[in-house]
Structures are given as structure tokens and as C-alpha cells.
Image (cartoon, rainbow, N blue to C red; front, side, top):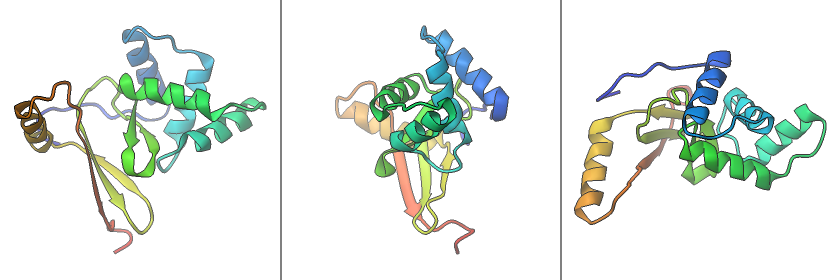
Length: 152
């Protein structure tokens, strides 16, 4: 990571940090939002809204509509609790929700594993180019595909 340091959260600490970040953003931490975030945080791979709806439905013992999960995921992305992996139409929990920065995802074509890295020099150059082209409020999401070390 280049440009700043942040604390990586996991488990209950991640849920607590997410709750704090959401409330600090002026939003409510409801039971449904907590359940969706917990399911996302527990997922070993990026999860779709359908995956999360199934997981939350199972945990709650009643059907949860994917549309409801999509709305919650949109809120999570907007408030920096989750990141969207564009090419997979899936989401990952942000392990440092109090820290805003841009996304660089490394995606394994073989096993589907995704690694999130930070490099503010790269994303800073992209933001600069976008601003030079007249764009504002740019949030880069960079995805690189290849084969991870476990699959090599």
C-alpha cells in the first residue's frame, strides 16, 4: 500500500467498525443491514446479492428478496463498507471501512480468488487523468486478471 496506512479489521471488530462507519455517515444500522454485512464479511469469495439473499434467508428462517439486498449493498458501497467487483457483479466487505481509498483488485482466472491492494500512486494518476478530462467525483476501480500463486 502506498500513500496511507489503515487498520485491517476482521470478525466482530470488522462488524463493529462497519456499524460505526455507517452510523457516522448518518445511516441506521438495522438488523437486516447487520445480517447482510455479516454474511458478506463471512464470505470467502466475492458474493452476489443472490448469494447473500440466500445466506440471510437461511439464517433468518424466512425469504429475503435479492432486491432488498441490492439496495443494502448499494448503501454499503456508497458508505465505504463494501466494494463492488465490477466484472463479477459481486461484492466484498471492506476490511477497513473508516478509510476511504480506491480499489485495485487482482482476480484469479483459475480459482476466482480476489485480492484487494492499495496503490495511491496508480489510482492518483487515474483520478488526475479523469479530472483533466473534466470529470469530478471519480472513484477508480481497477481490476487485473491473471493466475494467483496458489494456481501457478
